[in-house]
Structure formats: structure tokens, C-alpha cells
Length: 156
Ligand code: 4NP
Image 1 (cartoon, rainbow, N blue to C red):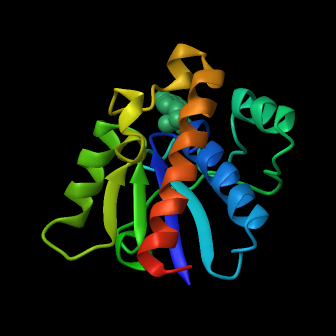
Image 2: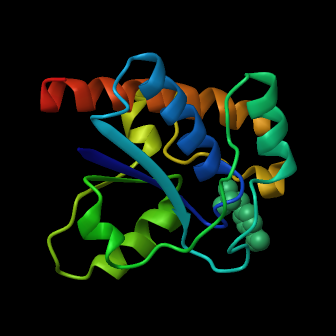
């Protein structure tokens, strides 16, 4: 089983969107038994909350399921339990590296590392920009490319 964890700041906007989109693609490719998907936030403000209304409305429009998803905070064990820990921006990435210390962890990367053509490193935070559409497009490309990398790496 390959485990993928998406990480943002609040775990209510970007990373739950990525979790739901990735799970949807994984399911459509029949890989649910091979790949497990989760998400978490570096911050603790929204623990237990469902995804933000903006994220919910995009997922509903795309007919992607998100039922039962609740925000949680990333813990150090996640860095060892997950094979791919995918940050939404540089701030999340820095926090994950700090949490990791000098320990050997899963692969820690930014989502847009998988989308060089995006021409930027960070998925903008829609909690502040209000632009959930642009985030969805980036998340979709990122998840598709990440899944292709996983399939090639693990011969799925
Ligand atoms: P996210 O967005 O990291 O994409 O979930 C945010 C959600 C909440 C806050 C910041 C970012 N906040 O400051 O409460």
C-alpha cells in the first residue's frame, strides 16, 4: 500500500481538495487497494471541521465525494507512515522539514513540483484569495502528474 498525505495550513481548503480529487482519480483508475490518500494541516485552528464552503462547492460541481472528511493536524509519525507527503506551499514545506528534523522520512515535496508548466511553486491560499477555481485547476494537474509518477515508480 502506497500512502499519500497532502498538507496545507488549515486542512480546510487546499489539502482536503487535493485529498478528494486524488482519491477520485485513484478510484477511477481502480487503484484504491494500492494507494491510500489522506490530508492534514500544519495549524490546529480547524481540527474536526469539514472542508471550507469554497472547497465543498467546487467538489460538488465536479461531482467529487468528500463526505466525512474532517480537519486534523499533521504529527511527526505522519512523516514516517506516509510515502509521499505533499505540501501546498513553501511555508508548509518548511514546517514539514522542521518537524522531520534529521530523520529519514517519506518523500516530502510541493504539489507544484509535479507541475513544472505551472510556472510557480506554491498553490495560492484561497482562504485569503477567495479563488477556489484556480486552486482546483492546479490541484487537478498536480494530482494527475503525481499519480503518474507513483505509477511509474511503483510499477502500478
Ligand atoms: P488552507 O487554508 O491552508 O488551504 O486550509 C487556510 C485555512 C484557514 C486558515 C489559513 C489557511 N486560517 O488562518 O484559519
